[in-house]
Length: 250
Image (cartoon, rainbow, N blue to C red; front, side):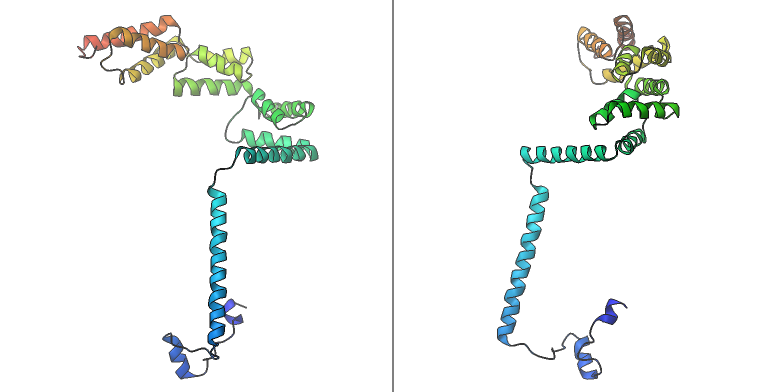
């Protein structure tokens, strides 16, 4: 039964005259309330509307206001207690879910996953067993992860092998896997990447003194992990080409 079918029929149904009045918005009620009743209705409706408005303001204020440090700390502790209780109830199921969620959409190193499990309170022995199992089925592959990381970071950030080696070490990649991954980048790749970084930086260095520009460009390459010899060679090359073209700012 629809809501229309369950609703009581209007008093004017069956009376054509009253039906016309209702259609044009002029249908009188069957029983006219007294002025006193109307006053009570208006006052009651006003109180209800006011209560609704106050409720909306309170909800909006709760969402918009900035929580105090104590409230944020209490919320954090509550989340940690809930997570700990979940781990205690079924640690293996929770640990497996953590691993699968973390690996969704992005590869991770074994060390990163181990740190994640430890942070969530998963026992070390159970974590080791699950990490071994995930490695056996190929969901964890540090060698493949290292190759992917090196290729991506060198292409997107122009990082040299020295800087990439430090990143891999922080991620727990062993020396053999790191060395194999870094072999993807040869001297030609490093020179091309360094030159691209210098050319891009030069766009914002117009008008600088030659020595200042050299120092800043070489420093930028050093922070990216390039050896001093290669860095200064690339910088001299780029600035020399600008001078040959009679660039007015250098």
